[in-house]
Image (cartoon, rainbow, N blue to C red; front, side, top):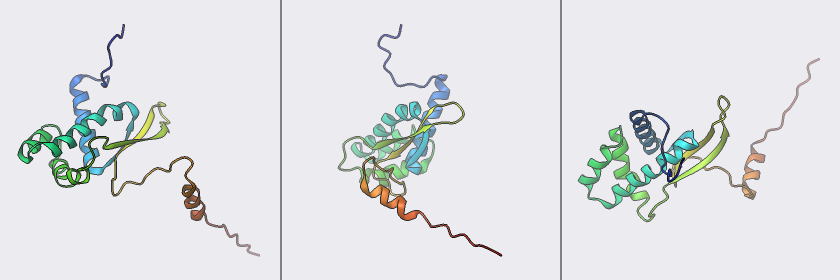
Length: 150
């Protein structure tokens, strides 16, 4: 029976799962966008929220120590403390967005892009029903000109 089994967890051995989570969170903090499966994104989403909240609420030396205990790259901690802390100063939670991309060809797993909200280098996905999205794609189309050689 699966009563009260509501934890978000990956079905790997504990050490492998922990390493995968740490690497995904580090990549998300460094590059602000990561393409992964939906289940993995659901698992690391609260971890990213917790790290950014730690950077915002705790004193700097305590926050740095607790962030470095989880992330695997020192620049991820540095970026969290210098860039992300100021970017999300007014936001209380919800620092990430999941954009569905469809199914993976090989195994049919649902793939999403997990990205930080208000990221600078990340392209936003078009919203259904948005009138400007159609105009942008129509303007990119080019006319094919055929040349006839005799």
